[in-house]
Length: 342
Image (cartoon, rainbow, N blue to C red):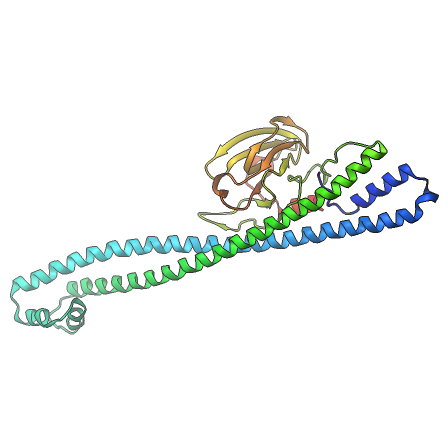
């Protein structure tokens, strides 16, 4: 059932049903009881929503930190590989230079070479060897610098990877907590909805509530959800170009405005929907589990279902939602989603 989380909806519905069945004089006490009961239900739903929103914020913060560390790890790994390749080249040049010293038969050079107990010892002795020319200094300095850089980068990489594993554990824990919160919210709403449907059946009422629009815009997820402002949060190789709305797998996603739906599939986006709105704007729904209606649809029509396809695979099911005014560059959808969610 859609949008039962809106303040006063349950209270208003219960009051209307009771008023339709009983005369006011006979139910004044009952109305007060039902009003108090409805307020309690509303407060419980609001508390559950607030908790899931808090968990969504924590999840996005942890995910952004994880993505930043991943980027650092990959950059460091590339630099380490480059340093290792340069080190191999410098080592080859150094060996050639040592062979040349040996073949030249220079007594002083041979003493330094033969009396050294190791390559490190040789480099230390060679630092003070006046025979070395400028080119030799450059070779040995570069060799030592690369060796130190590799050692430092390997240590740094180990620390970064350990930190990455730690953050990933935190991300997964927060994801599980958020998904549990959403599931509990859905179960609670299902129980409330069941009671309301029974009342509707008893009084002869019927129909299914539809999402309440804000102006011409309808919130794109029909069911318990959570989201935070993760616009331009760091992602591997780019900045986040939309807003993630988390919901249980298979939660219906609806057209936020009337318009024409086109379905597609991309490597990162997974199953996605492009909604060319009648208002002239373009809206994207990514990581869908499966598709809904296509062609021209009215606002509030189910056009897809929440999933984790594309590069969201294995993560928390969510809708990656983008708004492109006039079909141009994306803008931050968070203020619009926030207004519609109220």
